[in-house]
Amino acid sequence: MSALVVVGAQWGDEGKGKVVDLLTADADLVVRFGGGANAGHTLVVGGEKVVFHLVPSAALHPRPRCLLGPGMVIDPKVLVRELEVLRARGLLPAGRMVVSENAHLVLPQHFLVDGLREAGPGAIGTTKRGIGPCYQDRAARRGLRAIDLAHPAELREKLAANLEAWRPFVEAAGAELPDAAAVADEYLALGEAIVPWIGDVTEAVYAAHRAGHRIVLEGAQGTMLDIDHGTFPYVTSSSVTAGGACTGSGLGPTAIDHVVGIAKAYTTRVGEGPLPTELHGDEGEALRRAGGEYGATTGRPRRCGWLDLPVLRHAVRVNGLSSLALTKLDVLSGRETLEVCVAYELDGARRDTPPARGLERVTPIYERVPGWTEDVSGARSLGDLPPAARAYVARIEEALEIPVSILGVGADRDATIVLSDPWA
Image 1 (cartoon, rainbow, N blue to C red):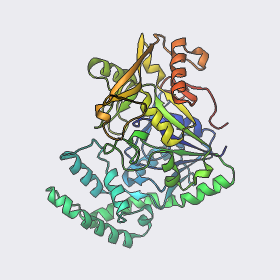
Image 2 (image 1 turned 60 degrees about the vertical axis):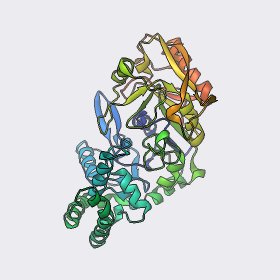
Image 3 (image 1 turned 90 degrees about the horizontal axis):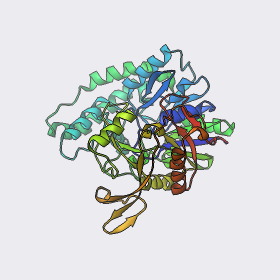
Image 4 (image 1 turned 45 degrees about the vertical axis):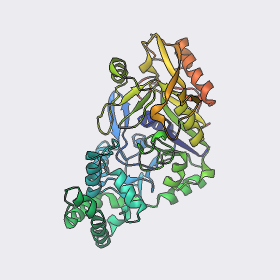
């Protein structure tokens, strides 16, 4: 096997960082293919928490090269900070990372516009990291790319034009645009630390594939936040599904061998939008506390609910999932019974997958299943789990018609049960 894709199967925050960390121990190349610093991947290694926002979490391993793909939008300030932290830890020596020359830059005007929109009517609960406005500039063909950092005169000209394009909106909102010369000076200074890393990611990925190297394409967010397949308009601004892995990395679809979907053993969501299985009050708060459900990027409390099988069926379909990595099984310990949403009722009809319209009106159809009181965080094989936990996993496999290949039973790197090797 040469290439596999890792994607979120819910609303993001499923634990992709830990699964990517596991899979990249045997990889040669890891490509982050979409999103920006609105995504946070948290790993716990030897009891120490490490949070990544832009750099692939594979940077903790000595072997794989880490690539930031052309589908990404990159905040230079965040990238420079991450590079400083990683280099201080003796990680990412020269030549181990490439920043795509075609990745777009998140700039001060993008933060400004994002914040103004979220302060007004129709706010959708973004991270206010400038991601949407940056992708908007890309689609309007007026964005600035990483390669522009290497060409100061052109960057200044493009930046001035970009700011003028945003002027009507910003001034109508009663705000003021940043000074073009000051922004250019600041970001060209940041660029001095970034330019040496800039290169042709597509060429590097193609060469690795031709050589038979193992490639991981690392996603951000989750399927239900995909711009095409998610809960529109409460979505991110990029293609976060397996199809986006191809466009965001430059690796063609015929090269993909396996697609791993990541899902928690329950459901969470940050921000606005429908969440059919959401638990409110003390029950929701108890699940939040047990799972430590606070955003790695924003610190915002996540909304929590029971496992939603219609959402996971949708993820299987639109990603072509080969297997599922089920994380945070340990969080459900201590409950005598659990509930699983197996379908929805909408306008008198049963639905097995989410509707494009009306998800906020569905009534979840629940199946009550036995829980377990045992602590499973020490389990390292399926046989170590209590029977009810094994039955829970089997019920998910039966409903989705794909195997669970990886089980997460705790926050630490080694709190993982590998049921089948996705590389095999």
